[in-house]
Length: 294
Image 1 (cartoon, rainbow, N blue to C red):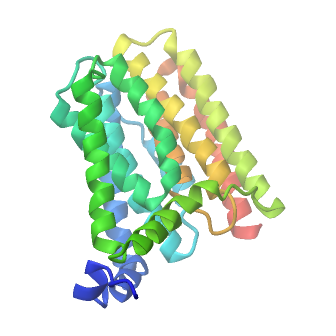
Image 2: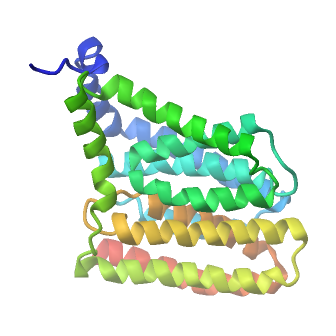
């Protein structure tokens, strides 16, 4: 007995073609980039409670981030789409650093995590980190955990209902294909390691500046810095495991660079950490040199 086709393939047989056109469209990338650009300033203000900005810091963040977009269009589109979800998830956490939130709010975080799981199942490794942050804002009761799981499971069930063939075998095959990428850990080719090491040094420099700034920062800023540096390293680890190989997902590295860039802009406004501007400039120039002439 042949399995019935999925609901989406039956009702919208051209969806795959439409999706291919969308992710290959420069207009889609432009729309996502506009969201990212507008979110950068807003997220910095949410995290550090200051409207001050540094032109030099913003330019350095922009150029370092832009170098990671020199990729095939489809990879850029999916990477930026995942980054948008990471930004929305981070907005929710940094806006709650000093007070607890309702289960409805935590449900929304679960929805965002579910969408990230659809893009790449390795995003499940973000769950322990998010749970730890929810515990820090006293939002980890039984109701909060239930709301988080309902938010995630609802997105996964919706995807299963819409896209899986309508049979037990079709559902099992769909689930297996969805989970498979989490087992496909592969080291990056040797040609990619100079760029990887440069990104690691970039993040290490941001981390050093973060630890230096913690001593003189107010409580909210310390909480934001801790959140950002921990998230950046987790995303970098996910990139090393899944995204550094040729053709791997780019949402993890774009997320790590975005979060690191938010911190670098903040450091550029602080007198004690403005020394970071010079090495960041050198890293940015080196990255573009590898990308253009490497």
